[in-house]
Image 1 (cartoon, rainbow, N blue to C red):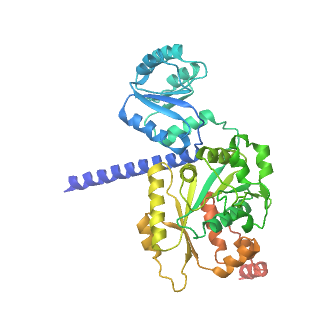
Image 2: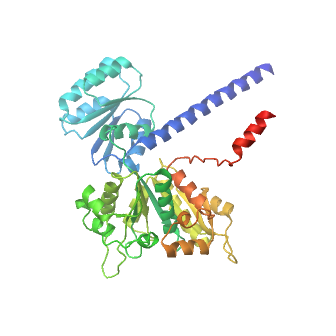
Image 3: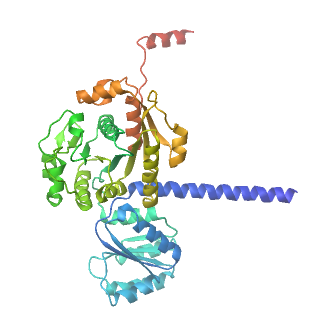
Length: 436
């Protein structure tokens, strides 16, 4: 009986250790994902020794951060790499997994160096935490040495560091907002969140309005720009920092809009690559790019959603919204395995005399918790829209104002510090307490 209890205790301790290890790995992977930045259009060839590492590389290759890179996975490790490049040109980056002893691995790498073209980078994934080996590899020009086991997130972070200057400002975050159905207020949520982000963090924010025919960004911020995002999308290859500055409309100290033209006498042809180029230039110049997507489905809409750092789905609590939101969530979870689930905002809730799907039932059906629930408030939202103001501008006491703060801070992974307001009588009350 005592032996059984001891065994159970040992098993409990072992399970606890495994849980702590898994939790630490998950935390490290999440941190790596946040640090990993998009990798440019390069060719990467990996030579793995086991199926697990091949799976890690394959998972990383399917991530949005490597979407521009061409990745191929081979088996056979360092020996296969040497044989392969004796007959073929080398790519921009070679990733080699090897469990060979130190001297044998160095010998294989010396042979590989004879086949490598100038400018080719090499990353080694070893199975021994060997400082002497690490120094020898650096002497031979190896860019990075990683110790297995590694996660796709850790691999992406390492590759990202090779092609992004760590001293340079990081590229901005992209937040994509889309409605589960037309007319659910996705643009209103998008604009208020972006404005709150710029005001609360005092950071530069760009709103890119991709609803070219019917966008409301200009109206919501009481602006009538002559130029905007359509000019950038017409010739995305021409867009640079100077042209970007000319096409943006400044709404406040930290907020600018890439307004839609909102004219119907011209056809708009948007390509996925064109969207990528325009958003890339924008994110290189500001910390936050907020993309207002129209309710519609196309190749470029899908590309923006898959490439964004965060996706916010706005839905009303009815059956059509539930079905559409569930479809979008399932697509994003399947295609963005290394990213967090999209955020859900339930808008226009508790509308009088309208049958609604309950919050708990809605969340259970689509498999994610709602980030925020915004009640139906036609008077406040209508007045703000007609005035060309954001909710908090119209009234800081509006019920939705703190909700937009919560959405903005969650997306930015920040916590707002609330300063407690003290009564003018506070010093006197403190003195009375001390006397007692």
